[in-house]
Amino acid sequence: MEVAILFVAFFALLLFGMPIVFCLGLSSMAYLFMADIPMTIVPQRLYAGMDSFVLLCIPGFILAGNLMNVGNITDYIIRFSNSLLGHIRGGLGLANVGGSMIFGGISGTAVADTASIGSVMIPGMARSGYDKPFAAAVTAASSTIGPIIPPSVPMIIVGSLSGISVGKMFIAGVVPGLMLGLAMMVTAYIIAVRKQYPREKRATLREVLSVGRGAFWALLMTFIILYGIIGGIFTPTEASIVASLYAFVVGMFVYKGITWQNLPKILMDTALSSSSLLLLVGMANLFGWILTSEQIPQMLSDAIFGITSNPILVILILNLVLLLVGGFMETIAALIILFPTLLKVAEGIGMDPIHFGIMAVLNLMIGLTTPPVGVCLFVAAGIGKIPMSHVVKAIWPFLLCNLAVLLLVSYVPAVSLWLPSLMD
View 1 (tube, rainbow, N blue to C red):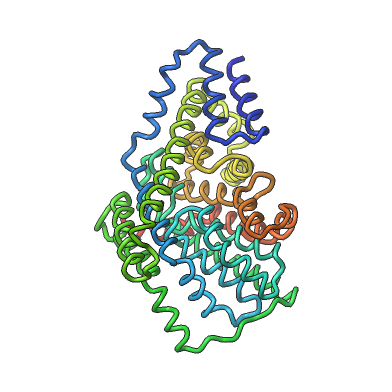
View 2: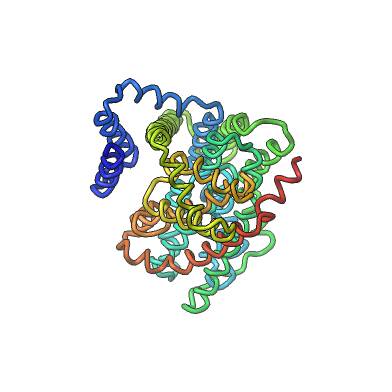
């Protein structure tokens, strides 16, 4: 009875449009009240969920992303991508994807990518003769690359939940992230050729080098993060602090977009984003604790193995579960509630934890662009000032190519495990 109340309350609040953090918290407290469990468990589980050294990465990388975004980094990234790809048919679409691949190595979050890249590219592509739904769709779809190419907030959560090395998770995401970006570029090019979208004038070598010098410092930041972690110079948590310091120096003295006047707002935005995310982590931990105490994870595991123990089919079921959840639930909450349970199922068929971690994150990222609750779709539609239905119609080709990459990552372990194996 109490479990039924937990799920009914959760989904009812979700349908009414309540933020996911309150859906988790209120439904959990309804369960505790009905089960006659003292409410003192709420702050205990909240604190237990947030009390992790690895989670210190989150405010660090969020601060680095905010500093680089305010420091005009987005403009430099887009101009550099456009100088390389703009002369190809539909080149602005390709530059959009390329910009997301570079920006993803800085922000680590899909929604930040959609908002930052989209605010420049969607209006710009519309002025250049592209359909707004296509511009919004390619922006939303390519934003999923951000949390795959390191740094990645979801991968930090995976590491804190399972003890998997965050550094190895970061490295494991490089090849799948590049594959995802290339697949979307091919898709964008095919659509551009079919719809005869325009191409830009080919940039000269001098122009490419000139724009490249402007984007150099942004590219260097990603290299510093990756090399520092791979080389064992610093941990992911230390990398987030190094990235923040680097972003401050570059944004203040090189790009000169950061001033002492706007620094307090940057810090306040970072504090708000970090605190809301950590509160979500705490609430999801409370919800997950209830599920564990009711043995829901074990029941789910038994149900999956009751259907089949064939590794190919089990991986397919895991993908379907994660895709379904990712289309309705916020990524961090979904990971905290589901990942430990599904990881046991994956290990039961011999999957490497890092391999499953990348697969899980990729599934949930695709969910951010899947109707009906895909957050990135709403952000892109809002920037383009077009109906959500138009973006949904335009994004299907990109969803299909992303699913193709997902299947490759799921069934070919070397895609995600080759680079981490070099660290051993």
